[in-house]
Length: 398
Image (cartoon, rainbow, N blue to C red; front, side):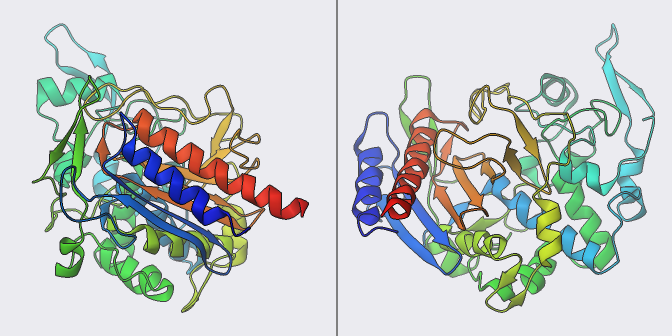
Protein backbone atom coordinates (compact mmCIF):
# COMPACT_ATOMS: atom_id res chain seq x y z
CA UNK A 1 0.00 0.00 0.00
CA UNK A 2 1.22 3.54 -0.69
CA UNK A 3 2.43 5.44 2.35
CA UNK A 4 -0.52 7.87 2.05
CA UNK A 5 -3.12 5.24 3.04
CA UNK A 6 -2.80 5.85 6.79
CA UNK A 7 -3.29 9.62 6.80
CA UNK A 8 -6.12 9.28 4.29
CA UNK A 9 -8.11 6.77 6.37
CA UNK A 10 -7.20 8.46 9.65
CA UNK A 11 -8.77 11.64 8.27
CA UNK A 12 -11.78 9.69 7.02
CA UNK A 13 -12.41 8.23 10.51
CA UNK A 14 -12.01 11.58 12.24
CA UNK A 15 -14.40 13.17 9.75
CA UNK A 16 -17.03 10.53 10.50
CA UNK A 17 -16.74 11.20 14.22
CA UNK A 18 -17.00 14.96 13.79
CA UNK A 19 -19.80 14.90 11.20
CA UNK A 20 -23.45 15.51 12.03
CA UNK A 21 -24.91 12.97 12.04
CA UNK A 22 -21.74 11.07 12.75
CA UNK A 23 -20.53 8.15 14.81
CA UNK A 24 -19.32 8.34 18.43
CA UNK A 25 -16.36 6.09 17.73
CA UNK A 26 -15.08 3.73 15.05
CA UNK A 27 -12.28 1.23 14.47
CA UNK A 28 -11.08 0.23 11.00
CA UNK A 29 -8.50 -2.38 10.01
CA UNK A 30 -7.17 -3.40 6.58
CA UNK A 31 -5.20 -6.58 6.03
CA UNK A 32 -3.41 -8.20 3.13
CA UNK A 33 -2.16 -11.79 3.08
CA UNK A 34 0.88 -10.94 5.20
CA UNK A 35 -0.56 -8.75 7.95
CA UNK A 36 -2.41 -5.57 8.77
CA UNK A 37 -1.55 -2.65 6.50
CA UNK A 38 -3.83 -0.21 8.31
CA UNK A 39 -5.09 -0.02 11.90
CA UNK A 40 -6.94 3.03 13.15
CA UNK A 41 -9.51 4.31 15.63
CA UNK A 42 -11.28 7.61 16.21
CA UNK A 43 -13.73 9.06 18.69
CA UNK A 44 -14.70 7.51 22.00
CA UNK A 45 -16.15 4.21 23.16
CA UNK A 46 -19.25 6.03 24.39
CA UNK A 47 -20.77 9.29 23.25
CA UNK A 48 -19.57 11.94 25.68
CA UNK A 49 -17.37 9.41 27.46
CA UNK A 50 -13.78 9.80 28.56
CA UNK A 51 -12.43 6.51 27.17
CA UNK A 52 -11.06 6.93 23.65
CA UNK A 53 -11.89 4.35 21.01
CA UNK A 54 -8.82 2.16 20.51
CA UNK A 55 -7.99 -0.51 17.98
CA UNK A 56 -8.35 -3.18 20.70
CA UNK A 57 -11.84 -2.01 21.72
CA UNK A 58 -14.33 -4.88 22.08
CA UNK A 59 -17.58 -4.96 20.11
CA UNK A 60 -20.71 -7.05 19.97
CA UNK A 61 -20.05 -8.21 16.40
CA UNK A 62 -23.54 -9.57 15.71
CA UNK A 63 -23.84 -11.23 12.30
CA UNK A 64 -20.16 -11.06 11.50
CA UNK A 65 -20.25 -14.08 13.86
CA UNK A 66 -21.89 -16.07 11.05
CA UNK A 67 -18.82 -16.70 8.90
CA UNK A 68 -16.96 -18.08 11.93
CA UNK A 69 -19.78 -20.57 12.60
CA UNK A 70 -19.76 -21.46 8.92
CA UNK A 71 -16.03 -22.15 9.17
CA UNK A 72 -16.66 -24.54 12.09
CA UNK A 73 -19.20 -26.39 9.93
CA UNK A 74 -16.77 -26.62 7.01
CA UNK A 75 -14.12 -28.09 9.32
CA UNK A 76 -16.53 -30.87 10.26
CA UNK A 77 -17.19 -31.52 6.57
CA UNK A 78 -13.43 -31.93 6.09
CA UNK A 79 -13.37 -34.33 9.06
CA UNK A 80 -16.02 -36.50 7.41
CA UNK A 81 -18.39 -35.87 10.31
CA UNK A 82 -20.87 -33.60 8.52
CA UNK A 83 -22.69 -34.15 5.23
CA UNK A 84 -24.03 -30.76 4.16
CA UNK A 85 -26.82 -32.42 2.18
CA UNK A 86 -28.05 -34.80 4.89
CA UNK A 87 -30.96 -33.77 7.15
CA UNK A 88 -29.74 -31.35 9.81
CA UNK A 89 -32.09 -33.06 12.31
CA UNK A 90 -29.60 -35.93 12.53
CA UNK A 91 -27.43 -33.64 14.64
CA UNK A 92 -30.00 -31.06 15.82
CA UNK A 93 -33.22 -33.06 16.37
CA UNK A 94 -35.34 -30.03 17.34
CA UNK A 95 -35.09 -28.63 13.82
CA UNK A 96 -37.03 -31.63 12.53
CA UNK A 97 -40.09 -30.63 14.58
CA UNK A 98 -40.62 -27.24 12.94
CA UNK A 99 -43.51 -26.58 10.57
CA UNK A 100 -44.20 -24.12 7.75
CA UNK A 101 -46.42 -21.13 8.52
CA UNK A 102 -49.02 -20.27 5.87
CA UNK A 103 -50.36 -17.11 7.44
CA UNK A 104 -52.85 -16.64 10.27
CA UNK A 105 -56.46 -17.77 10.65
CA UNK A 106 -59.47 -15.57 11.49
CA UNK A 107 -58.58 -15.81 15.20
CA UNK A 108 -55.05 -14.63 14.50
CA UNK A 109 -53.53 -18.05 15.16
CA UNK A 110 -50.69 -19.34 12.95
CA UNK A 111 -51.72 -21.77 10.22
CA UNK A 112 -49.04 -24.49 10.18
CA UNK A 113 -48.27 -27.54 8.04
CA UNK A 114 -45.38 -30.00 7.78
CA UNK A 115 -42.57 -29.01 5.41
CA UNK A 116 -42.24 -30.86 2.08
CA UNK A 117 -38.63 -31.84 2.75
CA UNK A 118 -35.99 -31.91 5.46
CA UNK A 119 -33.72 -28.96 6.19
CA UNK A 120 -30.07 -29.66 5.35
CA UNK A 121 -27.02 -27.93 6.79
CA UNK A 122 -26.24 -26.58 3.32
CA UNK A 123 -29.64 -24.83 3.36
CA UNK A 124 -28.77 -23.37 6.76
CA UNK A 125 -25.44 -22.01 5.52
CA UNK A 126 -27.11 -20.57 2.39
CA UNK A 127 -30.12 -19.07 4.25
CA UNK A 128 -32.57 -21.14 2.22
CA UNK A 129 -33.96 -23.27 5.08
CA UNK A 130 -36.97 -21.04 5.72
CA UNK A 131 -35.99 -19.06 8.82
CA UNK A 132 -36.26 -15.28 9.22
CA UNK A 133 -35.68 -12.51 11.77
CA UNK A 134 -38.47 -10.50 13.38
CA UNK A 135 -36.72 -7.23 12.50
CA UNK A 136 -36.60 -8.15 8.79
CA UNK A 137 -39.80 -10.20 8.39
CA UNK A 138 -43.39 -9.11 9.09
CA UNK A 139 -44.64 -12.65 9.82
CA UNK A 140 -41.97 -13.20 12.46
CA UNK A 141 -42.65 -9.75 13.87
CA UNK A 142 -46.33 -10.65 14.24
CA UNK A 143 -45.39 -13.90 15.98
CA UNK A 144 -43.28 -11.86 18.40
CA UNK A 145 -45.91 -9.20 19.07
CA UNK A 146 -49.03 -11.40 19.19
CA UNK A 147 -47.71 -14.81 20.23
CA UNK A 148 -44.72 -14.07 22.44
CA UNK A 149 -42.03 -15.43 20.14
CA UNK A 150 -38.80 -14.48 21.98
CA UNK A 151 -36.18 -12.30 20.30
CA UNK A 152 -32.97 -13.99 19.22
CA UNK A 153 -31.18 -11.45 21.41
CA UNK A 154 -32.33 -13.59 24.39
CA UNK A 155 -29.94 -16.35 23.19
CA UNK A 156 -32.56 -18.92 24.16
CA UNK A 157 -33.63 -22.24 22.66
CA UNK A 158 -37.20 -20.87 22.52
CA UNK A 159 -36.06 -18.04 20.24
CA UNK A 160 -34.96 -20.62 17.65
CA UNK A 161 -38.15 -22.68 17.64
CA UNK A 162 -39.87 -20.62 14.97
CA UNK A 163 -42.00 -21.82 12.07
CA UNK A 164 -40.52 -21.89 8.59
CA UNK A 165 -41.60 -19.17 6.17
CA UNK A 166 -41.50 -21.53 3.17
CA UNK A 167 -40.53 -25.07 2.28
CA UNK A 168 -36.81 -25.66 2.80
CA UNK A 169 -34.68 -24.88 -0.23
CA UNK A 170 -37.28 -22.85 -2.12
CA UNK A 171 -36.25 -19.25 -1.38
CA UNK A 172 -33.57 -17.08 0.22
CA UNK A 173 -34.51 -15.44 3.53
CA UNK A 174 -31.99 -14.01 5.96
CA UNK A 175 -32.56 -15.31 9.47
CA UNK A 176 -31.65 -17.73 12.26
CA UNK A 177 -30.21 -20.33 9.90
CA UNK A 178 -26.66 -20.01 11.22
CA UNK A 179 -27.83 -20.27 14.84
CA UNK A 180 -29.19 -23.68 13.86
CA UNK A 181 -25.91 -24.47 12.07
CA UNK A 182 -24.21 -23.83 15.43
CA UNK A 183 -26.57 -26.40 16.96
CA UNK A 184 -25.44 -28.88 14.31
CA UNK A 185 -21.82 -28.26 15.32
CA UNK A 186 -22.69 -28.88 18.98
CA UNK A 187 -24.60 -32.04 18.11
CA UNK A 188 -21.64 -33.49 16.24
CA UNK A 189 -18.89 -32.46 18.65
CA UNK A 190 -20.69 -32.78 21.98
CA UNK A 191 -19.16 -29.42 22.93
CA UNK A 192 -20.50 -25.88 23.15
CA UNK A 193 -19.99 -23.86 19.99
CA UNK A 194 -17.65 -21.37 21.69
CA UNK A 195 -15.40 -24.18 22.86
CA UNK A 196 -15.21 -25.61 19.35
CA UNK A 197 -14.39 -22.18 17.93
CA UNK A 198 -11.72 -21.57 20.56
CA UNK A 199 -9.95 -24.88 19.92
CA UNK A 200 -10.21 -25.01 16.14
CA UNK A 201 -10.36 -21.37 14.95
CA UNK A 202 -9.38 -18.82 17.60
CA UNK A 203 -6.24 -20.56 18.91
CA UNK A 204 -4.67 -21.29 15.50
CA UNK A 205 -5.41 -17.72 14.41
CA UNK A 206 -4.31 -16.04 17.65
CA UNK A 207 -7.79 -14.56 18.23
CA UNK A 208 -7.51 -14.03 21.99
CA UNK A 209 -10.23 -11.38 22.26
CA UNK A 210 -13.14 -13.29 20.68
CA UNK A 211 -15.74 -15.17 22.73
CA UNK A 212 -19.43 -15.54 23.54
CA UNK A 213 -18.62 -14.70 27.18
CA UNK A 214 -16.25 -11.77 27.62
CA UNK A 215 -13.16 -12.05 29.80
CA UNK A 216 -12.62 -9.28 32.39
CA UNK A 217 -10.06 -7.73 30.04
CA UNK A 218 -12.57 -7.72 27.17
CA UNK A 219 -15.30 -6.21 29.36
CA UNK A 220 -12.97 -3.38 30.37
CA UNK A 221 -12.44 -2.50 26.69
CA UNK A 222 -16.07 -2.86 25.56
CA UNK A 223 -17.50 -0.14 23.33
CA UNK A 224 -20.94 1.12 24.34
CA UNK A 225 -24.00 0.43 22.18
CA UNK A 226 -25.86 3.50 20.87
CA UNK A 227 -29.36 4.07 19.55
CA UNK A 228 -30.08 6.66 16.85
CA UNK A 229 -33.58 8.13 16.83
CA UNK A 230 -35.54 9.49 13.89
CA UNK A 231 -33.98 12.93 14.26
CA UNK A 232 -30.47 11.50 14.03
CA UNK A 233 -29.71 11.94 17.74
CA UNK A 234 -27.59 9.23 19.38
CA UNK A 235 -28.24 7.91 22.90
CA UNK A 236 -25.72 5.64 24.67
CA UNK A 237 -27.26 2.34 25.85
CA UNK A 238 -24.89 1.98 28.77
CA UNK A 239 -26.39 -1.26 30.10
CA UNK A 240 -26.69 -3.10 26.79
CA UNK A 241 -24.79 -6.37 26.53
CA UNK A 242 -25.68 -9.66 24.90
CA UNK A 243 -26.29 -12.45 27.48
CA UNK A 244 -22.94 -13.33 29.03
CA UNK A 245 -24.00 -16.76 30.27
CA UNK A 246 -26.19 -17.61 27.29
CA UNK A 247 -28.43 -20.64 27.14
CA UNK A 248 -27.40 -20.97 23.48
CA UNK A 249 -24.13 -19.93 21.89
CA UNK A 250 -25.83 -18.14 19.00
CA UNK A 251 -23.79 -18.94 15.92
CA UNK A 252 -25.59 -16.22 14.01
CA UNK A 253 -24.81 -13.24 16.19
CA UNK A 254 -23.50 -13.91 19.70
CA UNK A 255 -19.75 -13.23 19.63
CA UNK A 256 -17.81 -10.32 21.10
CA UNK A 257 -14.54 -9.48 19.36
CA UNK A 258 -12.17 -6.76 18.18
CA UNK A 259 -11.46 -5.48 14.69
CA UNK A 260 -7.87 -6.67 15.15
CA UNK A 261 -9.03 -10.21 15.90
CA UNK A 262 -11.47 -10.26 13.01
CA UNK A 263 -8.71 -9.16 10.64
CA UNK A 264 -6.90 -12.39 11.57
CA UNK A 265 -9.98 -14.36 10.50
CA UNK A 266 -10.16 -12.40 7.22
CA UNK A 267 -6.45 -13.06 6.65
CA UNK A 268 -6.99 -16.82 7.01
CA UNK A 269 -9.53 -16.66 4.17
CA UNK A 270 -7.10 -14.61 2.07
CA UNK A 271 -4.45 -17.31 2.66
CA UNK A 272 -6.50 -20.29 1.46
CA UNK A 273 -7.32 -21.40 5.01
CA UNK A 274 -3.84 -21.11 6.50
CA UNK A 275 -3.29 -19.41 9.86
CA UNK A 276 -0.14 -18.62 11.87
CA UNK A 277 -0.83 -21.54 14.19
CA UNK A 278 -1.68 -24.05 11.47
CA UNK A 279 -4.25 -24.74 8.81
CA UNK A 280 -7.87 -23.89 9.69
CA UNK A 281 -9.41 -24.98 6.38
CA UNK A 282 -8.13 -26.80 3.32
CA UNK A 283 -7.54 -24.64 0.27
CA UNK A 284 -10.10 -26.61 -1.73
CA UNK A 285 -12.70 -25.99 0.99
CA UNK A 286 -12.09 -22.25 0.81
CA UNK A 287 -12.45 -22.31 -2.98
CA UNK A 288 -15.72 -24.23 -2.71
CA UNK A 289 -17.09 -21.92 -0.02
CA UNK A 290 -16.53 -18.76 -2.07
CA UNK A 291 -18.72 -20.01 -4.93
CA UNK A 292 -22.34 -18.98 -5.42
CA UNK A 293 -24.50 -21.64 -3.77
CA UNK A 294 -27.88 -20.22 -4.81
CA UNK A 295 -27.88 -20.93 -8.53
CA UNK A 296 -30.11 -18.38 -10.26
CA UNK A 297 -31.66 -17.27 -6.95
CA UNK A 298 -30.42 -13.89 -5.69
CA UNK A 299 -30.39 -12.38 -2.23
CA UNK A 300 -32.85 -9.56 -1.63
CA UNK A 301 -33.20 -6.27 0.18
CA UNK A 302 -33.72 -6.59 3.93
CA UNK A 303 -36.78 -4.53 4.94
CA UNK A 304 -36.52 -2.66 8.22
CA UNK A 305 -39.63 -4.12 9.90
CA UNK A 306 -38.54 -2.87 13.34
CA UNK A 307 -37.18 0.63 12.64
CA UNK A 308 -35.31 0.86 15.97
CA UNK A 309 -33.23 -2.17 14.96
CA UNK A 310 -32.83 -1.78 11.21
CA UNK A 311 -33.42 0.54 8.31
CA UNK A 312 -34.15 -1.00 4.92
CA UNK A 313 -30.81 -2.54 4.02
CA UNK A 314 -29.18 -3.58 0.76
CA UNK A 315 -25.58 -3.50 -0.36
CA UNK A 316 -25.09 -1.92 -3.78
CA UNK A 317 -28.79 -1.66 -4.71
CA UNK A 318 -29.59 -2.91 -8.17
CA UNK A 319 -26.49 -5.11 -8.32
CA UNK A 320 -27.04 -8.90 -8.34
CA UNK A 321 -25.69 -10.59 -5.22
CA UNK A 322 -25.38 -14.27 -4.37
CA UNK A 323 -24.51 -16.25 -1.24
CA UNK A 324 -21.73 -18.70 -0.47
CA UNK A 325 -20.73 -20.64 2.65
CA UNK A 326 -21.35 -18.27 4.48
CA UNK A 327 -20.91 -14.86 2.85
CA UNK A 328 -22.59 -12.48 0.44
CA UNK A 329 -20.94 -12.47 -3.00
CA UNK A 330 -21.19 -9.45 -5.29
CA UNK A 331 -21.67 -10.88 -8.78
CA UNK A 332 -20.42 -7.72 -10.49
CA UNK A 333 -17.65 -5.23 -9.65
CA UNK A 334 -18.79 -2.91 -6.86
CA UNK A 335 -18.56 0.91 -7.04
CA UNK A 336 -16.05 0.88 -4.17
CA UNK A 337 -13.54 -0.99 -6.35
CA UNK A 338 -14.28 -4.41 -4.87
CA UNK A 339 -14.08 -6.98 -7.70
CA UNK A 340 -16.82 -9.40 -8.69
CA UNK A 341 -16.72 -12.58 -6.62
CA UNK A 342 -15.51 -10.96 -3.40
CA UNK A 343 -16.99 -11.99 -0.05
CA UNK A 344 -18.60 -9.70 2.51
CA UNK A 345 -21.21 -9.24 5.18
CA UNK A 346 -22.18 -7.14 8.19
CA UNK A 347 -23.43 -7.04 11.77
CA UNK A 348 -26.59 -5.42 13.13
CA UNK A 349 -24.79 -2.69 15.12
CA UNK A 350 -23.16 -1.38 11.92
CA UNK A 351 -20.11 -3.59 11.60
CA UNK A 352 -18.96 -4.36 8.06
CA UNK A 353 -16.24 -6.41 6.38
CA UNK A 354 -15.09 -7.61 2.99
CA UNK A 355 -12.70 -10.34 1.81
CA UNK A 356 -11.18 -9.86 -1.64
CA UNK A 357 -9.29 -13.08 -2.37
CA UNK A 358 -8.46 -11.97 -5.92
CA UNK A 359 -6.38 -9.01 -4.75
CA UNK A 360 -5.44 -10.49 -1.38
CA UNK A 361 -6.99 -7.71 0.67
CA UNK A 362 -9.83 -7.25 3.14
CA UNK A 363 -11.04 -4.98 5.88
CA UNK A 364 -13.27 -4.57 8.92
CA UNK A 365 -15.21 -1.51 10.11
CA UNK A 366 -16.63 -1.52 13.65
CA UNK A 367 -19.14 0.75 15.33
CA UNK A 368 -21.88 0.12 17.92
CA UNK A 369 -24.95 1.88 16.60
CA UNK A 370 -28.56 0.78 16.10
CA UNK A 371 -30.45 0.67 13.77
CA UNK A 372 -28.61 -1.32 11.10
CA UNK A 373 -27.73 0.37 7.80
CA UNK A 374 -27.21 3.64 9.65
CA UNK A 375 -26.40 6.14 6.87
CA UNK A 376 -23.49 7.73 8.74
CA UNK A 377 -21.96 4.33 9.49
CA UNK A 378 -22.55 2.70 6.12
CA UNK A 379 -21.42 5.81 4.29
CA UNK A 380 -18.21 5.86 6.28
CA UNK A 381 -17.59 2.18 5.63
CA UNK A 382 -18.08 2.58 1.87
CA UNK A 383 -15.73 5.59 1.84
CA UNK A 384 -13.21 3.49 3.79
CA UNK A 385 -13.35 0.61 1.33
CA UNK A 386 -13.19 3.01 -1.63
CA UNK A 387 -10.08 4.66 -0.19
CA UNK A 388 -8.38 1.27 0.11
CA UNK A 389 -9.03 0.44 -3.53
CA UNK A 390 -7.91 3.88 -4.68
CA UNK A 391 -4.60 3.25 -2.95
CA UNK A 392 -4.42 -0.25 -4.39
CA UNK A 393 -4.93 1.09 -7.93
CA UNK A 394 -2.32 3.79 -7.33
CA UNK A 395 0.18 1.15 -6.29
CA UNK A 396 -0.64 -1.03 -9.31
CA UNK A 397 -0.21 1.96 -11.63
CA UNK A 398 3.14 2.97 -10.13
